[in-house]
Amino acid sequence: MSPSPVDTAASIEAFIRREAAVADDDPCFGRQVNLFDAGYLDSLTVVALTVHIEEALRTPISDTDLFDPRFATIDRMAELVAESAGRTSDAAPGITADS
Image (cartoon, rainbow, N blue to C red; front, side):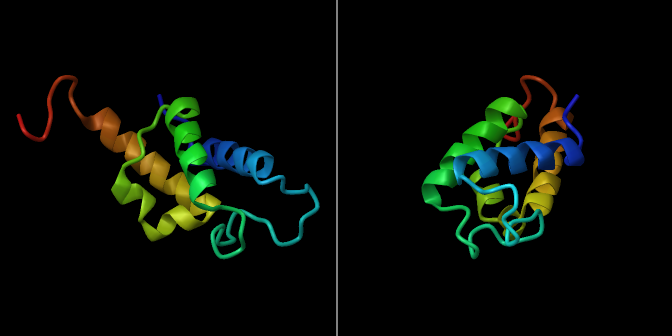
């Protein structure tokens, strides 16, 4: 069973706060802020975040997901991760799109 979007958002937020050294009282940080525009994420942090999502949340992140506009905010990212988890769980083991 994949984590809920709320749990996913909490995990992503905690990871970004830790990796980007975001203070608890930072008034600019939030789950709806564009993390790239605000400077909380850069290319290196995105790589680490992708690894976190894939390992901690057990959800693969595709290149398409990375370039999805929803990958810019925590709440929308959590939605995207939930969708990705749903696509993964819907696939039958051993069956690929090429089969």
